[in-house]
Length: 117
Image (cartoon, rainbow, N blue to C red; front, side, top):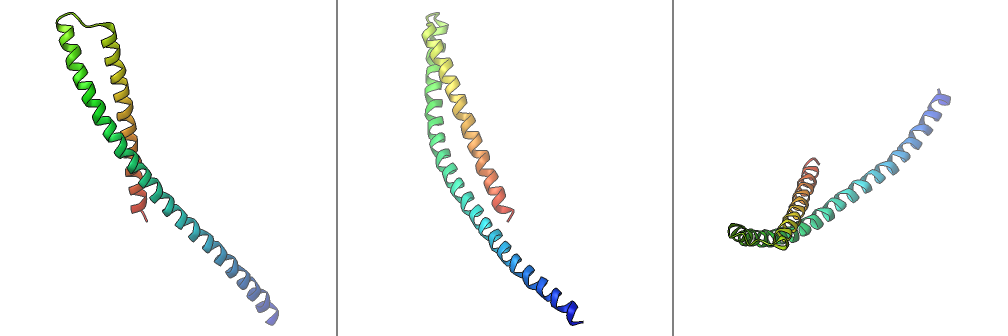
């Protein structure tokens, strides 16, 4: 009987020690993940704020340039440079809008992951 209990006791002690170290490592990684999510969230929110300001400014420029070019088109005085500038500004606006939407999705995803815990 003693021969059976001694090896089982040794296995239980070794297993318990291993689980403790593993559990500590898991807890450290969970804490690091929470910290990383918070850091990424703050960075994305700051970037979203800047992108939103830039998008609003670009939209204003695009709207005013569109009105100007439309007036010139109606009077048949639109130049190729004006049309090119309008197209380039539209491309820039669309690019900024895409970046804005991607940042918004990133923030929503981080919030979703934080709520899962």
